[in-house]
Amino acid sequence: MEGEVDKQNLSGHMKESGNGKSVGGGGAGDGFVDRSKVRILLCDNDAKSSQEVFTLLLKCSYQVTSVRSARQVIDALNADGPEIDIILSEVDIPMTKGMKMLKYIMRDKDLRRIPVIMMSAQDEVSIVVKCLRLGAADYLVKPLRTNELLNLWTHMWRRRRMVCLLLIF
Picture 1 (cartoon, rainbow, N blue to C red):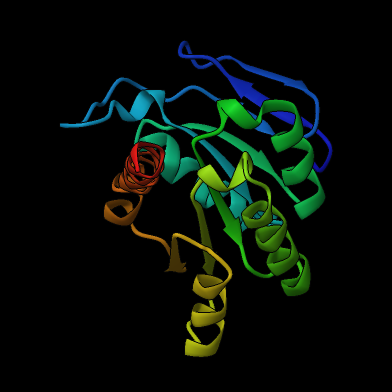
Picture 2: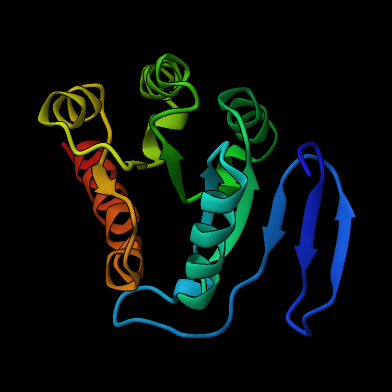
């Protein structure tokens, strides 16, 4: 239901409040990053698709907050920006709002440190190129596969490494 948050703690209990879904993932780690500590903001306005991606991300042990609109992404960033590691967003929310959201994030010096990964069932080259030119770290074509999601943390790691290198020089 739009406008509600589903929170699932590690014991599996569900709670409701707020305007998205927040969940702590399991403990599966990786060589560089413990995925259970990676916080992903998921934005998809299609309930079925959102639930499918949400479930896959949980299986990969990520912490996930799910929202339904570009406005809710911006609100979440304003409230919890430093706490968010990756944004995974549907392009079609509707499309113009997904692109506007991406532009907004890339123009903000504090928010652009967060990798934005766009996703869609559309695999048109022009849309992919537009997203990448606007600053998206990647573009995933739905249906998403677990192996793609297992490696999302690498975008966060690369972005932070790049920011550190820029600060040195």
